[in-house]
Image (cartoon, rainbow, N blue to C red):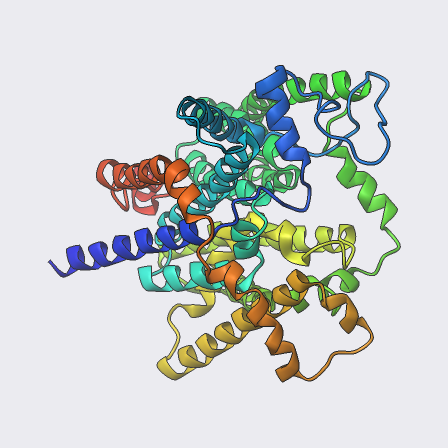
Length: 473
């Protein structure tokens, strides 16, 4: 009975949080790479192609040798934005029938912005379901909220929803689930399907290439060459389609992911600590919650080093699994520090794709701590959240570049927060949202209820250590 009451409370809190996101999100599909994502979506629906040269120009009308617009971003996200764009077209058709005066672009921007809120919401749900296999519910919920508010995740969810980073975080947690499933039920079919799904992931976000670290570690350790081949065979079809698309766009046979290699070459002489600790939008300076995450990784390393003394095989397997999927984040952090130029945008934007891993690391610090030490950590987390909001408010108002020469007193800087409070907590365009997005809001709630009813809270988890023990006996 008490468990049922707790579940009711958790899901009531979940729906209230989703309602909050719905009320305050920015209905303009703006973002760090906009308007390119909107242009790609529009081009596919309206023109039936991926040539955005007639939708989007930046400066002079420069085209490639195949007369396409020169762009090297991963545009796989349009696969999930297209349904929302089409939904806006249907809504505009009905609006036009009733002679209601509203621009189609406003409807399309609102629908696509709401898609980012939906993707962020399901990222947090799936992260909760995944992480609660390893940590208590309360620890997981607090960790999710700490990462949400303690990194730029909330900003790119609510204020600049026109980005692919939030969408990448959703595919990141699904990729973790899929990987945890195939290492338990390791057969050729599952590795083929994972290879196919992984090719979709890197089409959505190029930085998800580093997830191959999981697969490479496991497959090379097991030396199962058959599974390696099936993984590669599953990966190839969509990868070849991307190469063909790139050839049609640019006239060269390479995918957008090679730009990361070029960036490493261009910035090879940059100091890695400049991107991490620079007081102008540096990663750790903006979001000090990453220090807590690094502490969580250190604790996981210590747990792995003590494996020989640990007679609990389930705990041993859990520690190794957590070490594999979290050590990759440290590798990515080092690579990003060589690619990121402080001041380009909020430093940690490229790390919010790893929302589930950051949650795991934060939960690792919070679990099994003594009461007073836990209070101390929570106070630190609260300060990290406050500081992250402060720096983002300075970024939002554009005054952070003034502080490069020197920062004013902290109390004077805190005053900047009031300028962004409406963006975080103010209700925006409620009339438009209710008319356009209410069916989508109810549908998203129905999907959550379906997941809870059909799969439950534990059966939906792929990585089940006890089932694995039964198979190995």
